[in-house]
Length: 324
Image (cartoon, rainbow, N blue to C red):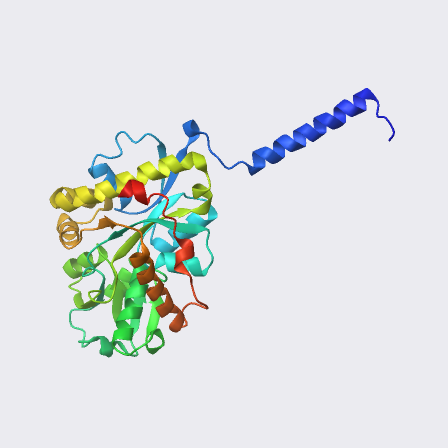
C-alpha cells in the first residue's frame, strides 16, 4: 500500500472522525434529562385545563409545550410525525391511526360514561328511532369516537354507514350545520352534547349506552417512546393526568368552573357535561385490547377501513406498573 504523507493521513483521519461523530449524533435519539421538553397535544378544555385546576402543573419538573387540536385524528397525525409526544383521544382515533400504520402506541387508558356520546336531532325532528336514520345526513368527525359510535349504533338496527350519508365535519363546523338545518342528525360527545341541548334545544335520539366501550387513551409517538430522555417525563405526565381525572371526579363543580373559564362555555353547559362524566384510569390489558379489536373489526366489516387492524401492535404497557 502506498504510504500517505503525514498531513494527508491526518486530514483523512480527521474526516473519518468527523463523519463518525456526525453519524453518531444523527442516530442518537436520547434527549439529555435537563433538556427535556414534553410536547403535549390537547383538545380545548382537556388535559391542560384539568391538570391546572387540580394544581398538578405547579411543580411539574419538565417544561411542557402545548398544542391544541380540534379532535383526536389530527392530534395522532402530529404524534406519528413526531410533532408532539403524547395526547389524549377517544376510542376510535387510535384504530384509524393504526390502520394507517402510524408511528404511535396507546400508553394509558381510562373508562368513562357513554351517555354523553349522543346522536342528536333537532327538537322538532320527525326522527324517533335509530332505524329512522336510514337515508339521512349525519354530521360526524371522521375517525373520532363519535364515528365509532355511529357505526355501532347503525349496526344495532341492522344498518351500515352505506345506508346513511356521513358528513365529515369537525365539531365547530358540525354545530353550525346542525343548527342551520343542513344535516338531519349529529353524532358528538360532551361538552358539545350539553351545549347543543341547552343552546340549540337538541334532542337526544340515542346514546352510546350498550354500544360504546367508553375508553379514552393517552397515545404517545414512537419517536418519544424511543427517546430514553423523554420516558421519565412521559411517566410523570401520565401519573399526574390520571390523578387529575380522579380529582375532577370528586370536585365536579370546581372542575366545571375551570372548564368553562378555559373554553368560554357557559358554566351551566360545563356543569351538565361534568355531571354525567367521570373518567377513571383502568389497566391497559387484554380486556381493553379485545374491546378495541372488536371495534376495529366492525370498521373493517363496514369497509370503512381497507383491511384488518391488529390493535395489540399499537399498545405499549411500559407505564402500567406506575399507573397502577
